[in-house]
Amino acid sequence: MLFVGWLALAITAASRDQQVLAQAPDPHQIFEQRCGGCHSPHAGDFARNYLVRSQGKMLTRKSSRELRGFLNSGHGKLSPVEIDVLVVHFENILNSGGLFQDKCRVCHDRAVELARHQLILREGTLTGRYTGRDIAEFLQNHGRLQQDEVERMIAVLKRQLH
Image 1 (cartoon, rainbow, N blue to C red):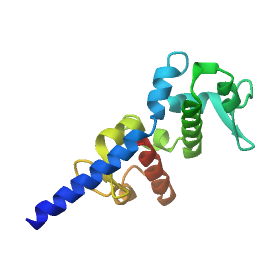
Image 2 (cartoon, rainbow, N blue to C red; image 1 turned 135 degrees about the vertical axis):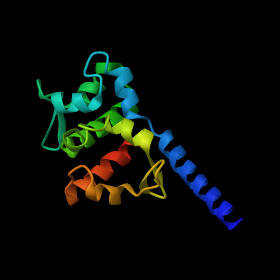
Image 3 (cartoon, rainbow, N blue to C red; image 1 turned 45 degrees about the vertical axis):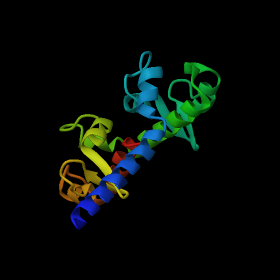
Image 4 (cartoon, helix red, strand yellow; image 1 turned 135 degrees about the horizontal axis):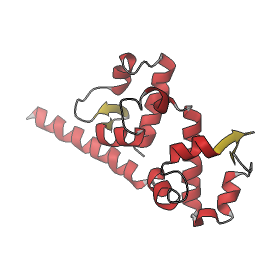
């Protein structure tokens, strides 16, 4: 009976974590629905090919326009919340340095697909959805990752769940 109680508690905690994450606007969905028709189909490709960070600002690569101002002027007809979500998402993509693309993409689908289908947050720990494995421990010997890359990869994968 004690096991059943712990199991119910674990399921409730996992469900709560997923509900909180589901409430935040999905940057992938925003980009794919509102931007992908005219630009790259996925935000990662778009950010790496068309954006650059300079002096703490996100700029368009071709015109060097500040991205937030460009979007606020009406490009894409995005709401202020959507602009905020996308700018943060693009910053995260550029800050990751293409780590998933360089080290994982050869075997795995996009980071968002891997994370949302194969991983779950359990009490703040990134865990294999079906294996129950602690992903930070697993990545110590997976994917040719160095120690500092493991920490960055965990952050990348956790962000995909938001």
